[in-house]
Length: 263
Image: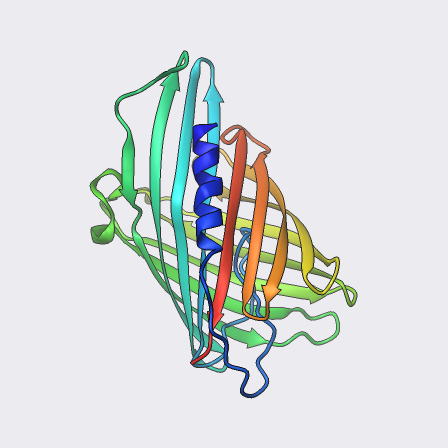
């Protein structure tokens, strides 16, 4: 419960940020890449910065042992370079601990994960049954990570992101791609599928399945669901709950916010 209180405290602290918004011209609707695992095909408008950040807690019980991960900071910076092209910079600060028979282990891992450096480009607009399409890719730089989270090799991933409008309030999006990382030479093919529904102008909900299929290891499949609240035209809050379908995650709790800043 202490870790859960920490997650909630981080989230409430973030929401106290104050923003100054310019109202010059017409700005497109803010579309974020959090809180779900599915990345949108949309880029941030040119010369705008979008900050997407939050905190999470996850745990996994295996017999008498409980493994917990607490992410104090999961920040992604997205900057619109061109009308259909953005640069992406991200990092996480995490803490991992184990508890055996209610006795917490003394070896706690903590630190920054490898810095994420990437880009996203919009490829095609939605046209009838053809989806909106985007392509994004990232490098994960090992020398930027803390000692407890530093891999030996550079991680790489890419995804094609697609989205369909179902009704005025509902939409479907999905990702297909691959990733290489964690000092493993094998590729892991990744997929996501999310359904979103706009309850009101401010409230929306989603449900999602996602996972990865490594070449030489067992597949991992997950589900999550959550709510978003558009507090202002450039400020969105979110909350998520989920767990794994296969072994690996007993609970996932996440909360955060996304801010878009004018030029």
